[in-house]
Image (tube, rainbow, N blue to C red; front, side, top):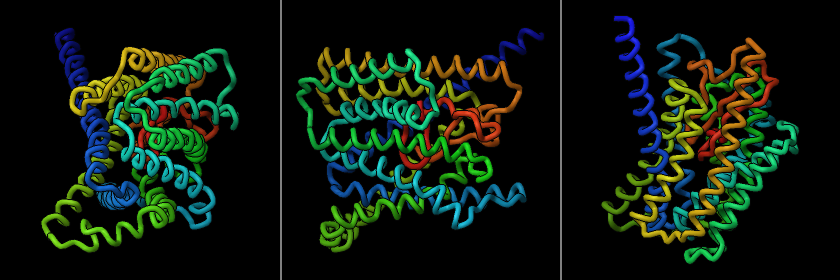
Length: 374
């Protein structure tokens, strides 16, 4: 009887994990193909991103209100001083990362975007070393070489290579390295009380919106104001279709963060990191099958080399985390479902930060606010 109960519990946990991974895949892969699909007909990616940020903020505000009503506990609200001095740098870096990433879809394929965006891990490691969040080790040098070599092989003689789009997404990856380093430093400040992803999203989105607005005003403002798809519309049906499509993207972005949150809180950040690796493979296969992206054997070998570097990084993080837990009885964020991070591709990260002094672990890269470094 006892063994039967254990078998049922194991099957239930496996089924739950699989279901959560599939939910995460639906939102994560879905928003990537959504962005590419929408930018084919709606050439205002910065405006699209700002609308998504507004939707995420509204959903996070609603979630905070519901949680507060059910728990009868007030949610954290930062002072203007802390908000502008300590949160604004992270919000600005995140806004540029997300904005440039979505902008690149005007020029490059989903496969090139996926591969180049994976190089963000390389910049995260570099900035972690600069800010002394990581110690220089031979294994980290190997990770950097594998990812950089894989990126070079994937883009070498690519038949669908676009310099402008590649520069945008590579710039986004570079800023992403700064973003996640600042995010890690922000979340280590336990006195701010932003360990909950909903609270982090709520505070980040307004500053992200304002940070992206000047870029939007310069590059898209005039064109959007004269576009018949929004302000000078003549067909109400077309306007409703555009607004509905933009709203769908915001829902997908919030759903991605929420699915990440569920997956980590019910399993672990390691599960999310491993799932993220296989998600990249699924994205490339779908891009080749559904969109006709041309991927040569050399490109696939480069992708495999890059994934091997990311996998090595994940394995090193897992071993380091295990050693940290074994040597310290203190609680980590990954042990507490109530304070798991990220919403949104959205907003918050996992890691060992029990007292605000230890480095966060298990990040994975996603968009919109705090997400998941690998």
